[in-house]
Length: 217
Image (cartoon, rainbow, N blue to C red; front, side, top):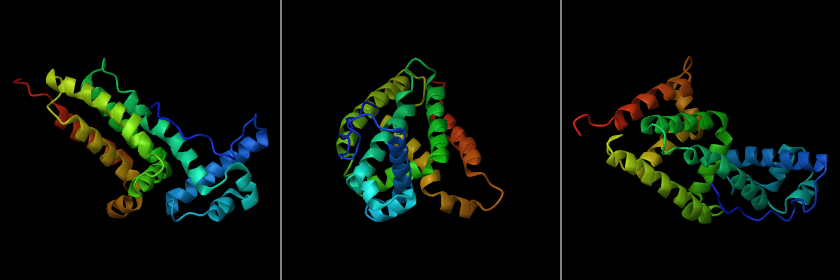
């Protein structure tokens, strides 16, 4: 997605960074991701992030002037990665396989990036104060374009008639649930289950059946 990103925080380097500066910025962002994903933006403090990073608070403030600057930097980096699979959905491909590939990749990302998923979910629950402009701007434009593509596949009889927006919403909900509610999922399934392997099989069956075109059309 070509989302308009927030300007770099005041603490970001204005000239080439040294190896130590790069490492410290990465350490702070990793610590911020850990803290924000656990406590949300409002429940997190700079002291918590500094402690998780193993840095003093003044040292942290050299790189980022506020916890909001860290949060915005994380969200800015996340949005490009998070939406890459949707952007990659190819109009020239086989429709059902393109959609199933998207489902699989979103589920993989929930497994590989659970903290990022929770970071994004927490931002949405707070009313998206740091990314609202991007949601209603570039994200909407991307989803509109992919919805038009899916609608075209439906009209051509290549997949069943579906509401393309709610199809995309359902993919988000059914894949990110396994990251955002991991503890609940594992508690209910109990030992001996791999939620992601089982989810992939189930979701592939679900969307294959949902999207199967009517042979009578």
